[in-house]
Structure formats: structure tokens, C-alpha cells
Amino acid sequence: MAMANNKTQCFTCNKEKITYPCEGCSKRFCLIHLTEHQQILNQELNHIINDYDQFKQTINEQKQNLQNHSLIEQIDEWERNSIEIIRQKAQDCRKSLIESSNILLYFVV
Image (cartoon, rainbow, N blue to C red; front, side):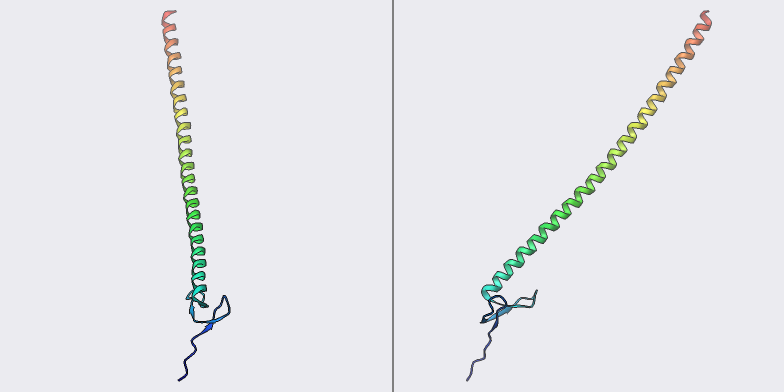
């Protein structure tokens, strides 16, 4: 009775061996090269995950910077408005003092 030949060519070493399929790329690898292939894929995945995390962090920092910028603009506006109100009140007080001084001078003279 003849034994069936279950060997196929490994994509990496091109040798006829018992091979296993990679479901991601549909290539067949011997056990040694399948393990190496999985390690390479894991490294690439980790690199993609790291890039994603860095990108996400950059986006969050930019959003925070935009929010901080908006808050700074609001504080600047509050400062300008407050200064204007103080100037106006100071002007009103000067005007009242001058008017009061004129009335007193009128009665004194």
C-alpha cells in the first residue's frame, strides 16, 4: 500500500516539507518558517499599534492645545472687558468728583 505524499513546498525555503497555511496571506510554510512568519507579522502588528497610539496621543494633545487656546482667548476677552469697565468707572468717579468740586467752589466763592 502506497503512502500519500502530504508534503508541499514551503514559501520561504522552497523545500518540499509538511507545510501549514497562513490564513492571513494564504501562503504555506514549514513549521520553522511558519513560526518566523508569525513573529514577523506580530512585529508588524505591534509597529502598527504603536503608530496608532502615537497618532491618537498627538490628536489628543492637539485637541487639548485647541481647548487651552480657546480658554486663553476667553481669559483675554474677560481681561479686556474688565479693564474697560474699570476705566469707565474711574472716568465716572473723576467726573463726579469734578462736578462735586465745581459745586463746592460755586458755594465758596
